[in-house]
Length: 122
Length: 207
Image 1: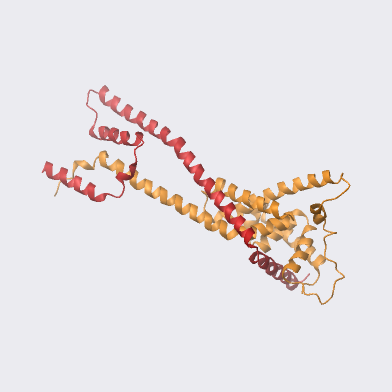
Image 2: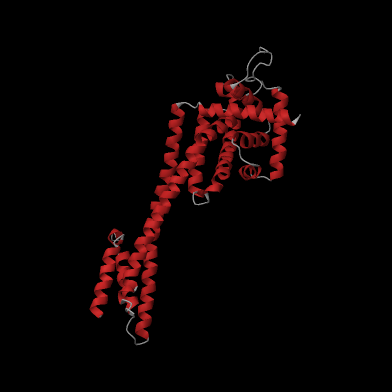
């Protein structure tokens, strides 16, 4: 078989295939769209399931870490460091399951808070 | 030089990093979901036609494509987008193979019954072949041509048919086809070439 004939077979069969794809009926297209939506919905469900399973585990691990840090501070006779105490406060927020939206996109507040502390010390 | 404010300790840095990180992760997930949606929307119709040709059963083909979508999203959604296409077709190919096995078992069981059902008749490539003694002026284009090709494809080995469907109809390159078929690139070339030869013999000159 020559290359030309082989190429012709490829081109003509592919053109016929493309035409059949383009002429799929509305019901079939709709069914495909629903199948796609279902696949993506499953992805969302799995993500939600994953986060609800692992967030408490992560919070517990962080709590254990902070507890160790605080305990080491007591052992050495030194009070727990300021960052460690601050981290403990942060952990309260995280482990408490509070809505963290209040911390988002409020750069103005943090700038103001930083200025206030800076002024208070100056 | 102004003094660094002490408030930049962990008290504020942790919520900031948590908040910022959460937004970024959420955006990434939304982007990934959109990319998957785009990918599946772009591939689903061709995939259905390919599954339909391989299985010769519309409902089975729809189920196979839907399963392949779910499995791709579930197992490979995190992989780079460039890998999705061959992986999707690998999943679809495996699913089609499973369906074909079921069809075969069903066909064997049904053969014991005196009356043969319509599906089984459609699966027989000899009975469903287009009569070659048809009009010499017949223009084999569009659906009619594809029907002839589908019938001819049914007579190929499964590996040759897969190579032809993936390479020629879906347009995967040799490397992608090798991933989809789970074989070497050399095997893909061999199967594809033999498929073309066999189709040429069956179909003759395409007009």
